[in-house]
Length: 288
Ligand code: SIN
Figure 1: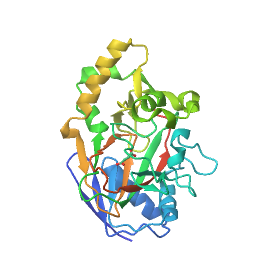
Figure 2: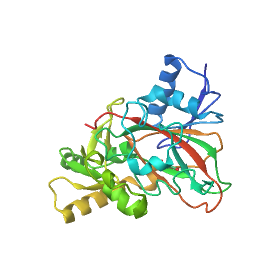
Figure 3: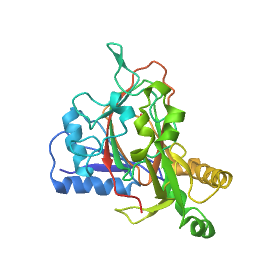
């Protein structure tokens, strides 16, 4: 099966048309899709997909083990109420309410972040199927942390090279979740990690910044003030428009982003217009 790939912006992103991912696919096709994804800086939009939840999971398995799959690490317990009742691999992002219960997490990801960076093995691919989208709004911003890293001066790169940063779900919990929703158990142990500030991508070998405002709490061995200044600089630097792309969804888009080299920000500007997305999240390698 062949498909067409077109760039979406100079800095990141490509769209694929002419491909139906609903059917089981061989490893060769999955490899070609994976290569297109990496070539596009880690953001691929596969247009016009009609997928069942099972087909979405089946496709996602080509990109690594999935959080929540039988025998695999679950996402943090706090979001368990938003998972698909029959498929714990599926995290539902939605403002829809059914029978008095939220059908997904409303306003999820309304801050710059890289999915579950607080895990020892954080996410590589997140694969989101846009099932219901607002008429206006509900876009997602992406930022290319490889391009941002590469644009730094040699002296800054040298200074960052040996540094590590703390990532902690407690920060996300404090700023993004209403208190009663947070499961206390999530605030310790498994949802804290220390990762290099600059990581090398397991597939491309390219270096990226790996810190994000939503989950990074500080730089290891720096005092709070120093850490805030340096992280603040990196966040401002990385989110400059030149390193970002804003994705406007079409219904049926399957959007794959690479959390190893991108941050993203879901814009919560669509009020009561219904939005329903199903997302799988692949377990990536330990950042190094
Ligand atoms: C997320 O995974 O952070 C949500 C993305 C979105 O809803 O656009």
